[in-house]
Length: 262
Image 1 (cartoon, rainbow, N blue to C red):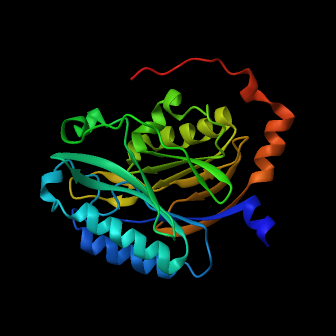
Image 2 (spheres, rainbow, N blue to C red):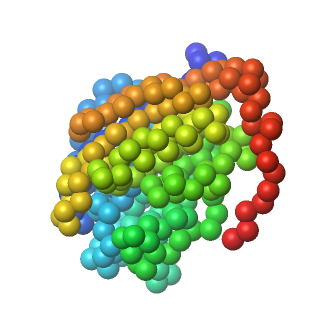
């Protein structure tokens, strides 16, 4: 049993509509969705800004909501014995961040601030961009969690630390869904990883429509899961499949070396 757990991760992708700028309603909604998963999973992945929608008015959100949601994530992770990951509006030291939290059942948590704030929507004017990438180890898998617009920048996503899984949480709109699909597949192929994208669905209060298309691609770019409706998808990823592909093809060994300057 222990060996099986080390070799695989079972991951739940929750693709959902969101209540606009209403953290309490969203927490209640996701608590119900998590309760209905109905089987044991290792990680539960939520969309970007899962308590508010992609708001460019963070001052509309109570400054304490970030800490309240983090406490909620810890409770959910402990209750369901699953790690939970997603991003939220977070206020700290007079600044707002689009901050991702990865919370383990033990209560341990790590965070990542979205590096590439979405200038087209003015996110760069409302939220402070992060500077450091997060690579975490969970149940024998090395995971790099990123947020939405980060997907467009392959250098930031590049597998220089030999990680196994890339995860993107998003509010990615319908007009650019072809880019979402293509880039998730590309990130899987070029990094020889499982690439997971969890997007929201539905329409927000400012008229943006979201198609879902939460998906998983394997290290050779084969589509494993694609969701086009409001639902929770469950996928299992395997460490030995990553190792077999990398040992056979060894494409990462031929990559160019460079450093990224902030």
